Image (cartoon, rainbow, N blue to C red; front, side, top):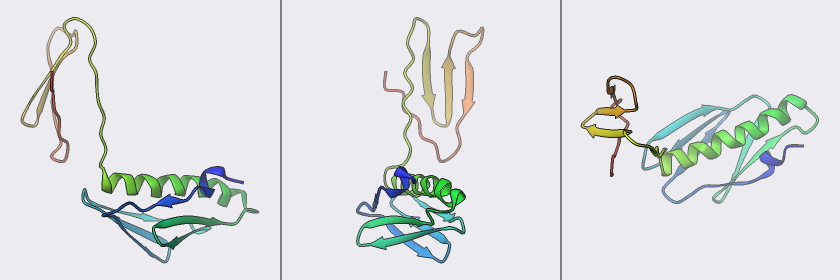
Length: 127
């Protein structure tokens, strides 16, 4: 029995979810994501709650149910809020400087490390 799969998924405002057969499409203000569901897993939408349905007697179905629930939840969070990662540099001499799509890191090497950022990634260096 999967405890993760039994938790309902809440659809937040501004996110639309379409389930067609064994495929789910999630759209939000940040973008849209598609995912093909495993054969033994089904999603049930009632109001703004998504429930994962699976066969509890099938071990593979139980294993995939929790994973599918986590993926769908991450899809909803991803299209509504996006992904954010904060990096904190501690110590003397460690610096980061962003200029346009180029991130320059001084991390103790004999030279600064310059990293070209992809188009969809944004970087801020506040201090």
